[in-house]
Image (cartoon, rainbow, N blue to C red):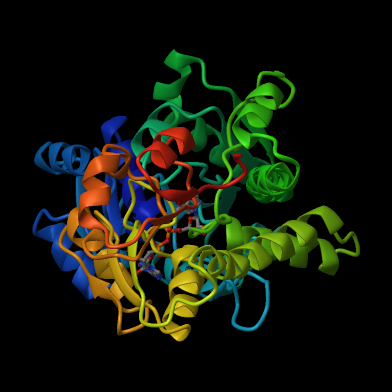
Amino acid sequence: MRIAMIGGGYVGLVSGACFAEFGSDVVVVEADPAKLEMLREGHIPIYEPGLEKIVDGNVAAGRLSFTDDLGASLDDVDAVFIAVGTPSRRGGGHADLTYVYEAARQIARAAKSDLVVVTKSTVPVGTGREVARILAEERPDRTFSVASNPEFLREGDAIGDFMRPDRVIIGIDRTDHAAGVRAEEVMRALYRPLYRIETPVVITDLETAELTKYAANAFLAMKITFINEMADICEKVGANVHDVAKGMGLDQRIGKYFLHPGPGYGGSCFPKDTRALTAIGEDAGAPSQLVAATVAVNEARKKAMAERIIAEAGGDVSGKVIGILGLTFKPQTDDMREASSLPILARLKDAGAVLQAYDPQGMNAARSLLPAEVIYAPDALTAITGADVLVVLTEWSEFRALSPSRLRDLMRGKIIADLRNIWDPAEMREAGFDYRSIGRP
Ligand code: NAD
């Protein structure tokens, strides 16, 4: 099989490299000259564990290459994937589909044969149909087969998620019977290596595939938001949210994942996808109150976290040094998109705090997003040194390993606001800290 992948970001690069690992020939088309140059020189523009090895191996084997020439990439391909960004539209929750539709137009103009066109980006219901319309309008002389193949990989575990997914969802446009059959054949062939590990493949229509992705993400976001609210109740009634989560999660109907409390979900997907699903429901005349509430509760939570830190620091952080451990929205990624650190650090800076931050991978991306006054430390211990208050925002493993006595020696104060529950409260109190975490007595 031979495919083109439009977009060399988190999803396009990982999917492209993994399809090559499955044995397909893959050309990744990337429009950003800086990213393309890095890729061509053998550097990976993002931090994703295991990705470099797979990219290097497949480039060396001649199965993976990078270009900005979409036209040339379409020579003899069986399918072309659209894996470009779908951020929230400015001033609203709707997904911005500019990049998707532009990619569709570029594909249509450059197509030299009948093509299977697959949206891998997360796109609202109806986008696949619009892609089909654009393709037909631009090139009435060609027959395009349109499919939707939403991606479920998690940053930080992206390779494992792609190579051993829980399921593959494939939506097929069957308006033209023969084109639908062709799309299904090509998609099944591309994912054939997964049959060996008996991955469930759900073949459905375009609309269902598109909605399934949003439904899955919104459900996970709701689960996180639910446990965050349970943590708030725990704090008021003296219960322990970890035991609540464990007790809930052992029920197989609930499941143990995504029941870890924290400062509110962030990242490149959950915030924008829950907003987009709210808009999809409203536009369709079937508003989802649950999803809308999830969005509102999570936004409020991220904002409330800074006030919580200020309160824990005694009500005033002006002139106080706050050591910040972790900036990315979760560990094992350099992605800063909608991280809870963004509103929290902005508010702490406005309140007059001196911010000393460290993140193992996120500091490059953070520089353009955080207040200019933030001081970036070369390591965790430097970020902590002289701090009146220590705040944990991302649960990187290396932070868990820091010993309480080391922290005590380096810090000036004794207040720790651990928003990821990485340490044991009893141990931290024994070490003399005024230690607060989320939802634990
Ligand atoms: P990204 O911003 O990291 O990557 C998109 C890339 O596409 C960019 O490098 C951009 O330069 C490139 N691009 C845009 N238009 C182009 C064009 N016409 N030709 C060539 N390149 C073009 O985005 P991402 O995180 O990879 O997300 C892509 C899509 O996948 C989104 O819809 C997102 O919701 C979805 N998704 C993301 C994740 C994730 O964890 N990041 C997981 C599942 C699904």
